[in-house]
Image 1 (cartoon, rainbow, N blue to C red):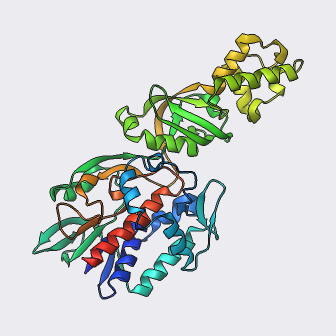
Image 2: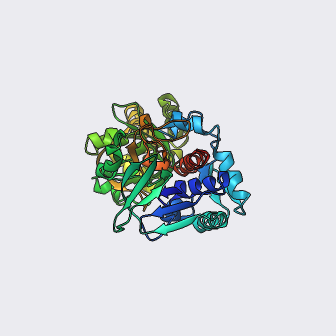
Image 3: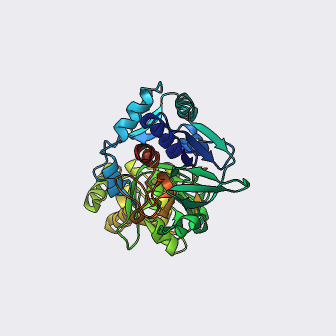
Length: 405
């Protein structure tokens, strides 16, 4: 029997692939909750951003801050193109957005869930809910599984762990006892709390092409930035939070970030744009002309932050005023004072160290017959469908190899 521990994206993909490779095998998914694929249901705001076109990804390190080398190796077997073909060939048409994120054409995660349930059922995969794994005991070349609330352990020939990320390291104790190195888990996707009431009053404001960096560090991101009632969110923030996940945790989520509101990192170009506006609108007030298409409320806030009266004329800016605007446009510094969880999704960095896993088969280096896939490992990604792609890829490869062996 092949036991899949965890009924999420990686778990179902591992189960389905195992059945395809070895149709005679008994494959059972053990899910600790009542509803399998619950996380798939909420990803992408309920629309399920299941992968990405990778069209603008030049280096996997930029989208997989942890695990990029492993993913590069595994993509040779099953990558984003294979994922696209896999779902479409099973009756789920997909669409690629302008931002390269891939969604089901239905714009509903239920399409993905139904597809996985249908395919697993067709192949004979059994799904058992309310089975929370407590421990694993190797026994004569097999694995004895102990579940909470179930008196009788279950014997399996092969086991794939796909339990997802865990916020507490104690959740990995049973794997540590088996010899696996565990990287302490910390949140990987989170938003920034900003304790500035005037800034938070701008809630709902979106800047489409912002850039952001951690002050004093070489961590940078870009993309849409959303101002919320607690601070900052949006792809730009989430991507930076992923890059800085462990660094920020070590500083108790107290650090400074610099925002470039205009998406232009060349300061000379920004100065030239301001000078051009000043010469074109000499007699107009500053607050009546919005440079770089900035939202009006944000523009008023930035004027105040730069110490420039909104009624001042563009022709009266002078060199000092131009430099003040350039600074607030390109290097607007905020203090982050804590984090907030992003939607209902939870992504961690940390988990089973990749040093404990065979990078070709995803089998444990310490326990024969034990495999890993998905976020239970120290692999995580930025937003945009990359985390789910890792789940599909790792699930596919772990399922294939455990069934072959």
